Length: 253
Length: 265
Image (cartoon, rainbow over all chains, first blue to last red; front, side):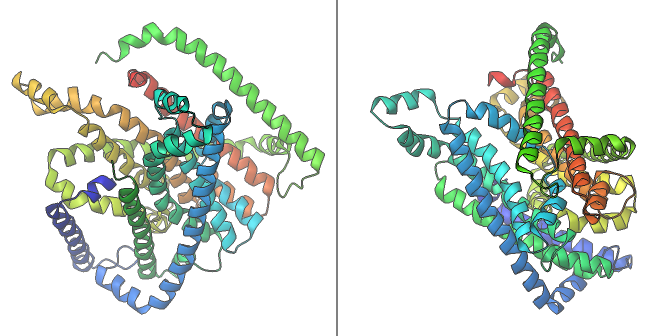
């Protein structure tokens, strides 16, 4: 997905913009032309007007959600990568841990959110925990997969030069695993924003999920769409930053 | 296709291996549950943090219809959305592959659409489709189709152009090339996406139920949360886990049968 975006020629970018404009025009005219009520589909122009009007509220909510998603993301990456390295250093551990982690990973993350809310309260910490849980499993599984990709013969070679286990890890296993680690992180960026918002909807003092929930209760669908657009912008920004890092650090790909 | 033939030869081996593995898994799970039970009793952990596994099992046994009904309902929503998402995802990949201009126009929009938080979208979908099974299936569909499209296109890219040239020189039609070369080549990648999509579809169904419904795992979760019934939350988590693992297992099983050459690569 990122490669298509990253290596996109200028013609592809032009066409991408053309597609977005096309969609906006069709949206605007069908909303106005069919005279759709706002709860079905508000027109693009009214959404933008609403966003400008509520700019302060949306910016505040975006900061809230962004902070939750980012803290949880960093925490989750550290836990995921750390646990994967630990599991790869202990012989035999990964045969036990990986099936368990795969099994837990197939449990829908949102199922934990009521529990986490009861444990950590309605404040920010419950959202950060939820995001960290969601991110850490994805990053853990991709890191483990990456660490396993090392060619046995390369390990034997640098061990024969007297490299310690740590040196093998640092000089060989981690660089080999890097593309997969970053790919896991890239997938997790969007997830972390979504999980933060989903958890906010169940209970929060602020944030985009809270704004959306309140707007739904007040049947203010222009506000819902505004918050959706802001949330997408945060995800895209986050996704873009990690993709940039990926291109910088995994330059050989 | 020749997909079915090699299996019949290998299936007995797979079966006994599978049985032994399943037995081992059951023993591990039972041992784990007993250990948790003992730890909870020994350290006197309050049920608010971690109820005893036996208490959770008893909660499920006390009202089995509620949980079975919830699993069935959520399963229907997930399965409907997942199957529709899988088919649509492959179709979109084929269309994008055939007409590159459509890909350039709309693929970025599809990528952006996936960054939209489902739950926000959920409120609107429930409004559009009403409080029905269909509304949840649409949410599941929405979050499961793009991984399928992306990976199918990745799979198409692995095709050797010389194979296509060869097929063409034999007079193969585009449809035949698609069926005989592109689709089989995309299968391994496709299944990676389908496994991901199966868990995403389940999340979509559960979250969709939060917008109002009377049955389903998402409803049970919300009810338990509002009553601060931690045992009930855990019981629902266990049910969701069982459903999630069953879906994942089913897709993995299909993968092993259909992409039998997967382990050779």
